[in-house]
Image (tube, rainbow, N blue to C red):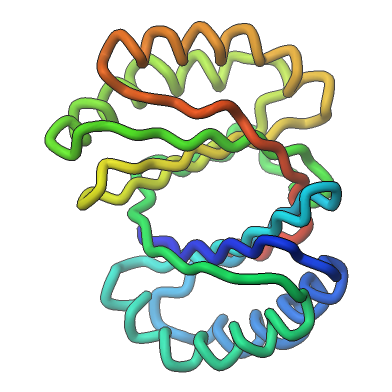
Length: 200
């Protein structure tokens, strides 16, 4: 899977953005080859708003760009703020508790590693980190995205409620220390709420 990551800073009207995604973007892109879903999350206090569109292959993602670029400009007109766009590979995507994700808290960490160690780091994440995450009370879903050219990764975890997310912080901090021992840098977390989810 490949993901187009649209990051808006200084978003002024997230509700208008969600409405635009639901009423305009999804009907436009859902019939395109390889489309696997679209999600949005935001933090109203910081003005950070993220939109992920998910595609079966990199070729499918690239083929959608001409249509999506026009919608993107219209979306930013509705949302306000500044937008940046990156493409990343989804190396892990799991939902442990299928449910309506809208309203669930989202915890995001950014990861930096040597590009030469990406496959080893992904294998470690799947074998050691993922089972620990899935065992945590209130864990709902995780998505791990990587840019193989830079060694940058984004890991987002979704939780049933704020309490379960906060309760997981001690284990997350221990994982950050273990990662540092492996030469992997993990940022301080940022927080959003899932505002829209349309998965195929």
